[in-house]
Image (tube, rainbow, N blue to C red; front, side, top):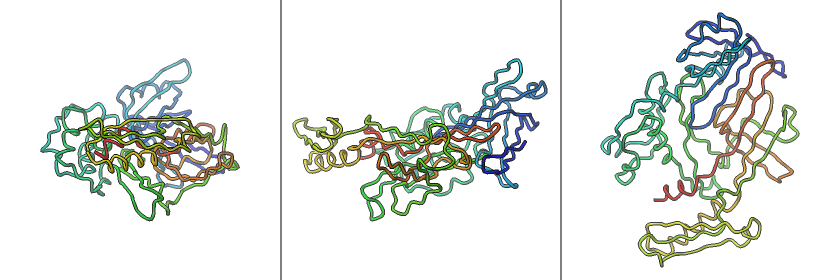
Length: 358
């Protein structure tokens, strides 16, 4: 079946269940960083319904002029809802199998001295997940201090998520305005192939794949919507030595307190040095002293955009112009194609940040 978008581009879409074609009516994709993709599609006709079964293997082939599209999907049916005229079918990609895997006992000897990247890749080598592109490595090696936080009995996705909670690159160089923490992410971008990637949106030479403003012609619905959130904001930080509660330092930013109101937090850290406690408090405010801003963008002609792609957003009403990664998308294909993008690398949570410092 072919779909023509508003730009006149022809998109070929083919759907099969257990290698047998089905007649679909609408398709909706949902994808988010560090999670499995899901797809819900509607089908019509008794023949298509007869081919639908829980655990059935779904394949969606999408492309233009013979080129495979990032929306091409392989997965497993987890739910279907027959009704009088149509049946709604939901399938998830193979990352979900990692979350339902047999329990594995990870021991210190399994992780110490190993690269977190390859530990996660090995855990993902399961069932239908394709890890053939996971060859880069991160250079982040598990120490004996970190090992206890990665070991125990857990499923494969739980272990992968623990690895990724420590897979964070730290940049303190001329290409970044300030000390920058960029977390590794994972996703299946196409078919069953798993990718590990970094979206260094703060790099001075970061290149966006698309520029959006409130005047962009292909915006639909509400267009660009900003969410400004003070949940993680800290403008007064107190760091206390874990060995002596009377040894502490408080740093406050009066201008930020005046602008946003007081947002104080207290942290405990394993050091007796007052200068180190002061350094940590200042860095905490530098990192968390301003609200977190994320954007949702509803538009046409964006179905080719993938998780991790960098988008430049210009919002004059907020006096903001910034480059941010795609962290979630929903793409709906029916009579036309629309995509809802979520942009904005969430800052590390305070617990993640303290965990990383430790």
